[in-house]
Length: 178
Image 1 (tube, rainbow, N blue to C red):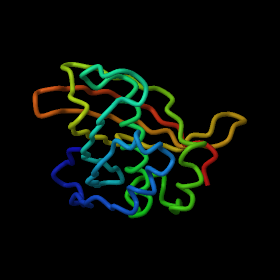
Image 2: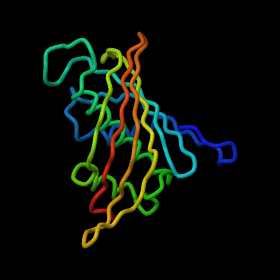
Image 3: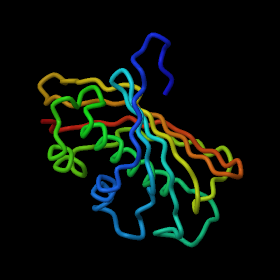
């Protein structure tokens, strides 16, 4: 996330171990891939730099590389943590009125991935890789005759120490918002 020269300074937050543990609670133990997450924020948007480890695939024999299913699970964990930390610290536009209790209530049923695209440029080692996620925009929308929701555009990247690279974008919908 790059801020213009006249933007407010970027704030940084190291991994909140208790929050991370709570965010990962819905996952089976062998599917808890997110290890650390440093969050930064400026101008109402937030981003995270994360470390991951997938010792063994949860559903298939070893492919030797990060695959689409695990990339999506890693994205979910990164996104849930980033939203939870942003709510806790008041960092993200559109979530100013949310409490952590709101987040916990909405985490699974009301945070939807409306669109997810991933580009696998070079194989990423799933046993030790990093990820970055940034919120590019969050807007409140109310469709004609419908309930309001938050629409968010995000971008993500994965890398490993051997030149592995993957990146993509996801559109999120936060429905049944408080």
